[in-house]
Image 1 (cartoon, rainbow, N blue to C red):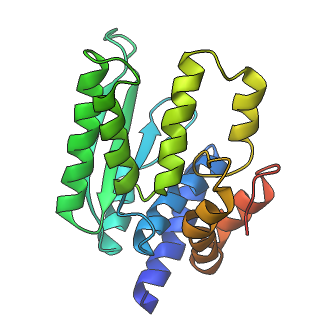
Image 2 (image 1 turned 60 degrees about the vertical axis):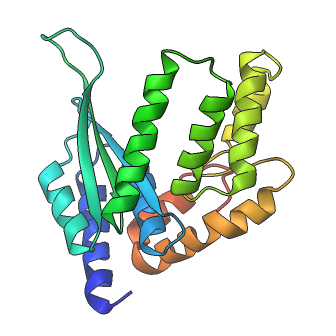
Length: 216
């Protein structure tokens, strides 16, 4: 990464932390973008919920993406139909190239459409989840465990303690129980090392405010 991009990334780090009511969430968002920049993730999705606890300036957010040489598609989704109190999600599909962004966007739309017509653990749903997992850079073993785990949850084969325990170990996704170390080395570790180097504010927040979650 050249010196100009490093400077932009550090300014981006400060911007996100300063303009978020939830610094840990802002740091986690930046970790996804860093993953794209260091080629761990082909693409990422960054969501902003617009309610009174947070007021990210989205146009300035977009400016930083462009300065970093990233391409994106923006979508706004209304989460309810009450026009007097519409809660919206603002989503950015981000990559280094437009083709990958479009592939991720199409896969997400296909998944949402299938939710209305297919069973949660049907083969067609699993195929789309696998595609999305690859586009987001998740290790194949972690995606497979996600699908197995989802099926067990739907069938009430995992209790709340199991679910909670899985969520407490890692920052970015639920690692499989048999391949967690390999998945960490492939995905988490290079992102965390890059954050320590390029986005120190967010790295410090994630490292110090994550309970028992693994860092380096």
